[in-house]
Length: 519
Image 1 (cartoon, rainbow, N blue to C red):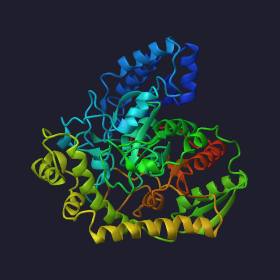
Image 2 (image 1 turned 180 degrees about the horizontal axis):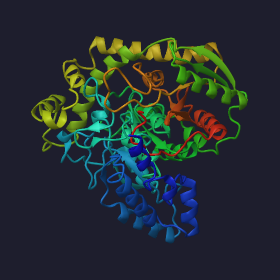
Image 3 (image 1 turned 90 degrees about the vertical axis):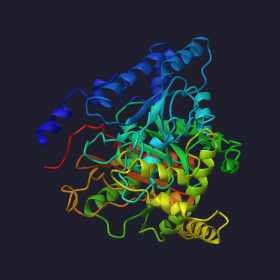
Image 4 (image 1 turned 30 degrees about the vertical axis):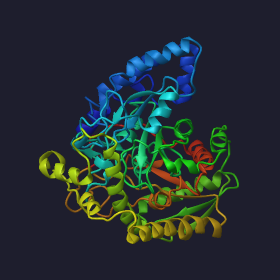
């Protein structure tokens, strides 16, 4: 194994061998503004990079489909630039989006499921409309945990019936986590300038942490969900995945905005964009009171990483406040909400595909999976689908009680209470531990033992509040991120804290494409 790992690491896939390795959006814009680079050449370079290490080489399998129109779009944007028209900081920038985000073009939108192959959405998702208007080149779509990791128990992160298994670029036998697996892997491996993922509970921040990149889950309602295949309207949102916090700011500014097709976006504060788009202030952590959330029974390895993060906050002038474990657990109630809302949301989405689409209800999807067991369910089942199908309507008192309980435990008794009682500006926790093996071995992980690492994404997700993960360090060569989260609509504040932490640590390290770290 060690010989194979060494061979992979030296096979020419290192970031330094790629012209645009670790390039930021600002870097790329500066090159295009000077005439040294065109959107066509940049798009072609990323397509070549995908062919080299996603389709061949280590075979990351992060991309489920490429946009056949990508180079033509780049040419059009180059013509606009030559004519003196630049739409903004994303003009000509190649972006990948997750395969549960609708596009009315030559690509599929399937959530990784064979059941939706050939079912064409009637229009672009709201966020895609905004990306196109901003001048982004939609390079293609990324693989994901099928149905955004909410089809069955013991699901395999990064696997879909249509796309197969995505691999963590740091260590190829390790999980990329999910469900925005391909988006995080693509950004980590420099297959694009930035990507978009979606999250219901951890699906942006968890894979971003495991793949050593920045992932931002905004307040629910900041980014339109229209045209995004849903799980739960109470918690669903899309968000950017990038290599730097500044790039996340650029992406989120382009994605955010009201959409008449998503009523949640009506809550967007009028001054949000002007506040968020200001330059990120330096030394933002100075004087900030940051609550430190710890696991009740922390692993020695992760405790050391969080201790180091707390020390970084102190050195930056922040005031770390030790909180201990998060005081409530909204998971059970939130899970009940997700089952109710999945049925309603999936049925509503499928109705938009028109009368000719073969899948019209969640029940149809369940039947399809049963009929195509070998392709769709060789690794895990569809218990979440069948449980959701058994639920009643959203007028059911049990649903209303579960949603009220989830919000109360995550918000009133959780995040809001902690921030009020301790006079906090934000909360911080390790996003999750290092990635486990894609396929678990009997007796547990030979490197990290039998006990699994937890995730800190739940409270902010169940509250519908924002969170951002930024690289904090590595364990055995596997990245681990730290999660900043807080009150709704505080994206500008969280971006500033995350950027200051990033500047103090420079913790991101490029992937090494090792085959394994098992001795």
